Length: 89
Image 1: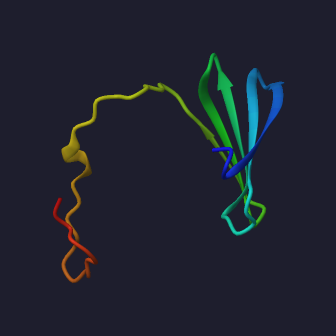
Image 2: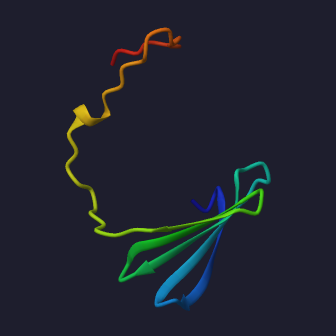
């Protein structure tokens, strides 16, 4: 992550430990991403985009590495869609 972002410690506020990620290149969708942690788990993320908009995400019921049924990720292109490459595994 440090190759792509400048990482800085923002300290403790709003009952969370915060870090800031700023992209090292200028041509990105986001100007900065702030990550809030509680007990070592991410619970909040604030994204500031290149247009000045802010998106605030709050995470609940975080589950690390859950078992997911691969069938949930099966994609069938709708009729009339061009598929580039080999869509089969």
